[in-house]
Image (tube, rainbow, N blue to C red; front, top):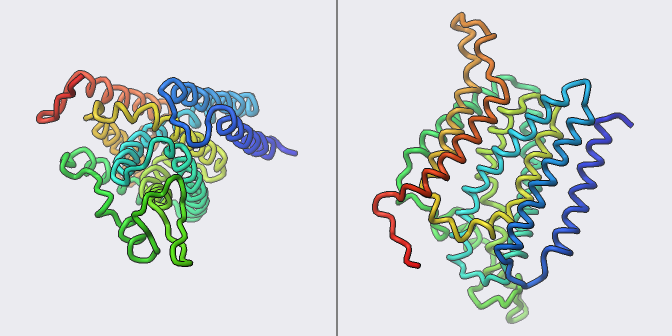
Length: 327
């Protein structure tokens, strides 16, 4: 058994054991998640992610262990920061469908498990494409730079509207749905026919909408880890970040309105990453390739500074016209 196979086995084992621990000991069916529990779960997933990062460093010690560890942390924090933006959309969806708080945990879990399946498929396809066509990275770069500019300048009126979303319209048109109170059920039988409840619609929407988010996040991760042979680093950093989404949701849902400028911070990160991926094109203009390479640690620093900076700025500067919260 080589080191790569061992790392895959350890990764799969850690995920399975962690899910059992998270679901069996830290979560209870149809129970609301308190802020304290959410904090414990968030710290649990973050600690587990960094422990696996330490294992990667140790496993490849003497080779590229340090570089792989830095790449893992950079990709993990990038995906984690992008996930924060996802959470705000999740909050809007839960509010629109009037999902009861004691159903949040189950619905989020199923939606996230769907998202993991889609992420694995996206990464596999992306790795194969990058390995075969080098120019795909430039396409990714243009797309991310465009997304960053568009996100930075988007108006507050562009807020996500579940009723106008393509996933919602698809379900209403092609699925037998009901607005009847689900009472914790995903499917209701009426007149010998099965109807999908609001809970089912929310789960499906979370999974389908994550495809849209993955279109941004997967290319961004490839900018950190461009080597297709290092799929494990991409898989593990991405999946660890997605698995922490549920606890992060409960931790941040009360503070969603406080991060007015987080979107701008994420936009700057995407723009930076897009430009970074396009820099090698300057070699055709005679620029020495040595000056076109941006180290991974610079990307890591940029992610940390932009996201933390936008959060701190949001706390101390309310967007003009934003409603004042009454204690």
